[in-house]
Image (cartoon, rainbow, N blue to C red; front, side, top):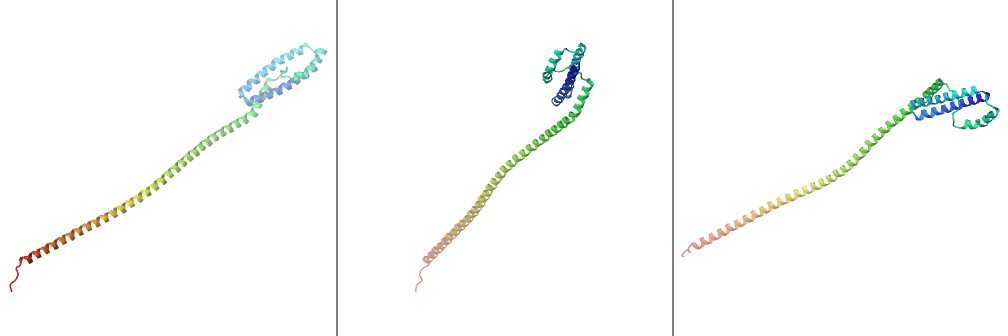
Length: 216
């Protein structure tokens, strides 16, 4: 019975450690409800194993050969993944589960909040980057507009120069027209004076011819 009690105690310790590890891993990767379901399944399994332990106690101590075989195979049984016959209190398991949840759940909730805040900050950063990209595009568009305005200014200056040249040509043309008109008027005046002078000479000649010579 001492060997059997020792095996039961070792099995209890091994199963408790396995249960702790299982609950810890499950808490990290699954929701709280799933953890409770897993613990309840383990409790049911241990209760069924506890019934088998009670039956083994009722049967009495094993034979010496069976004790030797059990001692020789105890190491292999402890290292195997099979579940040992052990009794676990359901209330203790519930308290253990609640303790693990109270220990890890706040950190996980804080981590969740930090991740949500990080996600929000990333969204804000992406929006800011989009705005900056839009500003850069607008700046490029403004540069294009500035180049267009510069070209327009150059062409405007050219047009102004052409207009000045046209005004100068118009003034020169007007002056030439006035000069030509004056020359024409002067020519007409000269021609009229010549015509009048000629008529006067002709009239004088006619008068000289018409007068008779005086007798002496």
